[in-house]
Structures are given as structure tokens and as C-alpha cells.
Length: 358
Ligand SMILES: NC(=O)c1ccc[n+]([C@@H]2O[C@H](COP(=O)([O-])OP(=O)(O)OC[C@H]3O[C@@H](n4cnc5c(N)ncnc54)[C@H](O)[C@@H]3O)[C@@H](O)[C@H]2O)c1
Image (cartoon, rainbow, N blue to C red; front, top):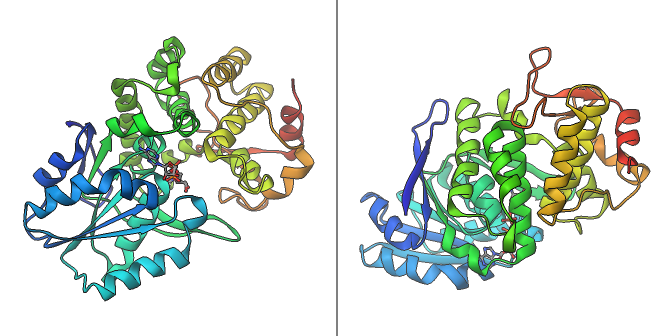
């Protein structure tokens, strides 16, 4: 694996992000002597596919290793699963000098990170990210948490990993539709942060929805830079919410049958149209964005009517004082703050108009 970038959280120590194949060797190399126990946490799929070499590498270093797994899927990202994992750790006498290794996609990493944040008031953790979405997004930046019936990610903590290993080789076994979920976040990073990456994505064939390791690395670097500047999501990190105000409402309105990446793709298309109609983004840029998403196999048209989704807009986390706020790019590659904020107030009327635009 190669060292790609360091994330430098405010008030915390920098941690490295590695990209490449064979994370077992890297894990053993970065393992700290004081971590006498390891708890690998993955879902059934990622634990079966990826845990064995990691366990072998750690056992070769005389580390006591426990592997904990839970059923794959967003429905497992709950307080109940977290409690079950914690109970298993208590039963196995896992102590404060243990290190949790989250292995999998965003669900496994959000859960593993949140367990690490609160187990015995907080222990260390490392991530081995195996989905494209986790590599370019969920593994970077220290947000951990679980869903509740009232909404996604409503209970959680900021807890930074000690290292992130992005297993590019793992993407080979990932479904094309799952890869596309990651591509949506890559397009988002390019649209709000990296104009050159946006052009490179436009120039890429999109074949098998598997971007090169170099493109994945560029997207990781964009996320790492944003979260290093604003770790606790009070300012510039909000640019990463582009597409998410509408996207979260679509996920809720479809009872989560629309995957997150697809919801964000539609959300970005609609929010960019809102920006173009208001004169905050060039019409041509909104069209280029929709064209890129469509070419990468992502949807750009909402699957439900505005009236079916509008009630879910109000419960979005970014909503302040009853107004809907969106993080909107001002060019393809950047967000200009307005009135000191990286989000803008958007009326329901403007959203409804952009929703039904052909
Ligand atoms: N913490 C953050 O900053 C952040 C950012 C973005 C998203 N997220 C969260 O991430 C979650 C979505 O993550 P996701 O899209 O990775 O979903 P996921 O973790 O559910 O993984 C998707 C599916 O792929 C399987 N899988 C994982 N790696 C595989 C591989 N290499 N080969 C074959 N199958 C594999 C998993 O078992 C699962 O069934 C959401 O809960 C979202 O809220 C968190």
C-alpha cells in the first residue's frame, strides 16, 4: 500500500491514509505494541471476505484477535447492533489497550468507529475500507454513528481513527451498483472541491464503474483536505453536503429503497438546477454535472413527486430555523461562501420548480 495523505483533525493528531492492495501487511506494519488485543468488526460479507489475512497478520505479531460480525446492510446500523457488539467485547474481556479494526463499507466503519468512541470511554481504532464509498468518504473524517427510526446518523460521535487503509483490490468483488454509490460521492467531491478531478471524471470511460486507483486517491485527498480544515462540520465541511438535503429526503420518501449514492446523484442534479435558476451556478455547469452522473450510470430524475418528499426535507439535519438549506457549488470545483455560510437558504417553491424540470 502507498501512503496517500495525512488527515489533520483540529485538536487531534494527524493520521495516515493508505491506498492499494493487501492491507494485511500494512496493518501489521502500523500496529502499535501497546495494542495487545484486536477486535475486528465487519458485516457477515466483509468479515468472510477480508478478515482471515488480517487475523493472520495480527496473530503473527502475538496480538489476541477477536472477530465480531453482524448482518450486512444499513438496517444493522443501529443502537441495538452496537450494544450487541459491546456486550460481546465485554464478555471477551476486551480491555482499554485494545484496538478496533473496522473492516468493510460505511455501515461497518460507522458502527466500529462508534463502538470505539464509547467503549470504556473511548479506545483506538483503525479502518480497512472495502467499498468505494467508504474509501472516498465514510472512512475519512471521524464521523461515526448509527441510525434510529427517526432518521439516519442521528446518534453518534466524532472519533478519529489512528489510520485508514483503503483496500483498492477489494473493489473487484464489489457489485457495480455499489461502486456507483461511491462514484456519486466522487463526483460530489469534484463538484465542490476539485475542478481538475471533475474534468478527469468527464474524460474517464466509466468502464465497469471502477475508477483507477489514482482517481480514487484524488477523491480521498479532496475529502481529507476538507475535513482537515473543518473537523467538526461548523464551516467549510458543509460543502460535502451538496446533494444531501434533497438526497436524504429522497431516501426517507422511498423508505431507503433508493440507495444513498443514487439519492445523492438525484439530489445533486436538483440542487444544481436550483443554483442555476437562482443565478448562483452557470446553466451549462448544471447540465455538465447531470450529464456526467448519467454517463456514470447514476440516476438524475427523482423517483417520487415533490409532494411525496417535501415533508422529509424539513427534518434534514442542515435545516435551521424552519428554512431548507443546501450546500451549492458556484462553479464545478468550488463553493463560494455567501454571508459567511457554505449553505444557502432555498425555498420549497424553488425546489419544487427544479424537481419537475425535464
Ligand atoms: N462517516 C461518514 O463520514 C460517512 C460518509 C458517507 C457515508 N457514510 C455511511 O456509509 C454507509 C454506506 O456505506 P456503504 O455504501 O459502503 O454500504 P455498506 O457498508 O452497507 O456496504 C455495501 C454492501 O457491500 C458489501 N461489501 C462491502 N465491501 C465489499 C467488497 N469489497 N466486496 C463485496 N461486497 C462488499 C457489504 O457487505 C454491503 O452488503 C451509510 O450508512 C452512510 O450513512 C458515512
